[in-house]
Length: 353
Image 1 (cartoon, rainbow, N blue to C red):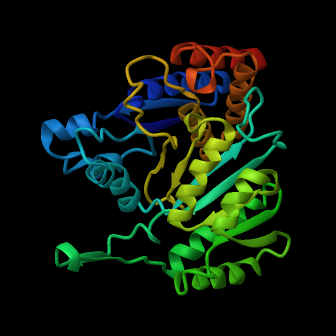
Image 2: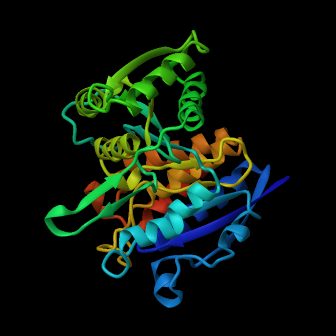
């Protein structure tokens, strides 16, 4: 029997509520499957940790995390006390970059039992493959002068390796889906990096003659997410474009609180990290009403990554059964608690076995 060693970082705000909820579901999945087990080790690294120690994680934190197969993260952020650039770059992005988690994948699907804010939407099931290590989120740049003469420069960095890795990952993913890849570009306005992105995309697609492709400017693509998301299968994008598109993807599903994500180390050299798209939501933290579905669906992605797609699909079906039964947290216009939603999902998993 496989035993998976997983590092838990609940983080801040509702992360401390939804991570334990998702762990209960993952443990139920292991019990149902019978072919694997979990060993979870929790770490308190967070903004609270920063306020006590002056760092988001200890100096040997990355060395510690290397001993685990994967990382299950909740949420990071306490903007009223710790600036976002400190919290994110001190923990989340530090892990992503140090462990070469070069691809971020985020699905968006119209789930049974949910009302999309879109008017009469057709069923959609898409996934965004976001380059996760460079692009618009580089650390290269600087500033000079002050006042009216102040100049700030932020450099985008696109490498052949990083760009091709993300695009190729998208094509490989499309082979097991509906065999269509859309490239998010803006080559009519960003005159160096985006024509480069287009060129790499066009070169890579020749290796996949059975995959249909389109290339769409990001502004039009954002509009199409609202007007006709059912047309999309796999979308490959740069770091910034993917970040924006996937928040929109959560919105058209009905709540960003249900959107999952995975940061993948493609080569398997380091742990991958699984985290929901939503933030720490300090306004509802501690009230017991946080939506656990984003974190639970993220757990399904962890199971998929480990090769347990069957029980992973069972989780998603149980989520939809729960939503169809009207068991929803307030962000989905329901009145259920975090615990009630979690318990219902586990019960529905067992019913389907």
